[in-house]
Structure formats: structure tokens, C-alpha cells
Length: 249
Ligand SMILES: Nc1nc2c(ncn2[C@@H]2O[C@H](COP(=O)(O)OP(=O)(O)OP(=O)(O)O)[C@@H](O)[C@H]2O)c(=O)[nH]1
Picture 1 (cartoon, rainbow, N blue to C red):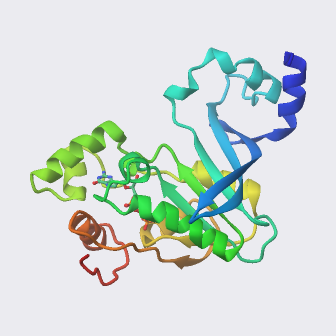
Picture 2: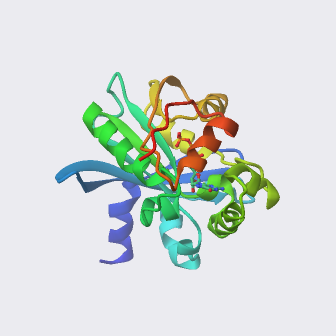
């Protein structure tokens, strides 16, 4: 396919959100059939790329973006994405999960945290409900400290520190996640209020402050195990998560 044809296929699939400091180029929808509990669920998938504003202040056009793809090594940078299910734009009720990337829990199935369970369970909740979106936030690893630092935090936790103490000992805030980009993309896809799947009321507050229209909160607890008990208790004791009875497995 020549460049002209490539551009004509792609340019209507790219939308740009302009912020004073940066632009978000959102590509999609792309049909994504996903295996969930032995069934195929079809999501609409979008990914977005953040580009800092150019000196002249204008956003790159789709053509410019496509022409310059090879000038950057985007694989070295993290790009986030969103899986949309059902009639997300128009459904009167839609569920949202803002899922912070967890390389160890989501990919490897680590039981040190409940992230992998929450990822799968939120997909179940969204598909059972019929309309919703799962945002997978790729610059949120370790509540914002990055994967390498999270590995070091784990080593400190093996010396007895809890998750919050380990972050602080490394010179980080307990939680440095930012939701602005995800909220901007959400607003592009849906204007009506949403129900947020989370146990973390601070996350609800942070998102409301950042302009997200949240009508309610749905909890999402997995089972406590010997491996994640301290992690879950610390979330309740120190990170403001709503309590629930933690049953030992
Ligand atoms: N720094 C640090 N981050 C962790 C640790 N375990 C999991 N994470 C990260 O924590 C993030 C998930 O945040 P949580 O605090 O578990 O939960 P939350 O998103 O605030 O709340 P929920 O919406 O209820 O899941 C992911 O980015 C994980 O990579 C840990 O031991 N230390």
C-alpha cells in the first residue's frame, strides 16, 4: 500500500484532543475480540499518543503524525489504551475501570497484589452490565513510580516495610498517578456520567477534581491470600481504601 492510501485509511480513525500543554492523538475504534471465561466478547479498542505542543502551538495533523511515525521509538515510551464495550456513548448507565498498569500482577499473575484479579473482574463486570470502558493506564506502574522503582520497593517490603513506607523510603509520594489524559479521552467517548469501579475513594475524589463526572462507585475486592494480605491491609489502613472483611484463603 502506498503512503497516500495508508493516510486515507488511517486519517479518519485519528482524533486529536488539544490541551494547552500537549495534544492527545486517539486512534480507533479497532475491533478486539477477547476471550473471557471461555466466551468471546467483542470490545472496541482505542490507543492514544501524547505529544507535547509544538512551538507554533498547532496540533500535528493526522498526516504529519503518520509521516513522522518512524522518527520516534514509541516502543520505548508507554502508551495507554481503552477497551470500550457496548453502546458506551449512549447507554444511560456505563461502568468505568481506570486500571493502573501492573506488570507483575496483570501479566505474570503475581499474587503480591490483587491487580490481575481486578483487571479480569472489571472486564466481567463491564460485559455483564452491557456498557462500559476499561482504561489501561500505562504510565501508572507502581502507583506512578515506574517498574524499576517498584522492584526496589518490593525488596524493601521484604525487609518489613509496607507498600507506603517503601515508596516513601525511596523518595516517592505514596501515590503520584495522574488521570488527566484518561479523563480527556473518556470525555471524547462519552459525555454522560459513569459509575467507577474502585475501592479507593481518594481515586474518586482525584478524578472528580480533574473533571470526571462520576455518579457512583462500585467496589471490586478479590480474595485475600497469604501473599497479598499485608498489601490489602495497608491499602485500607493507609491509602484510604474502603474496608471489607478480608478472609484468609
Ligand atoms: N509502589 C507499589 N505499587 C504497587 C505495589 N503493588 C501494586 N502496585 C501498583 O499499584 C497500582 C494499583 O493501585 P492500587 O493502590 O492497588 O489500587 P487503586 O488503583 O488505588 O485502587 P482500586 O481502584 O481499588 O484498585 C498498580 O499500578 C500497581 O503496579 C507495591 O507493592 N508498591
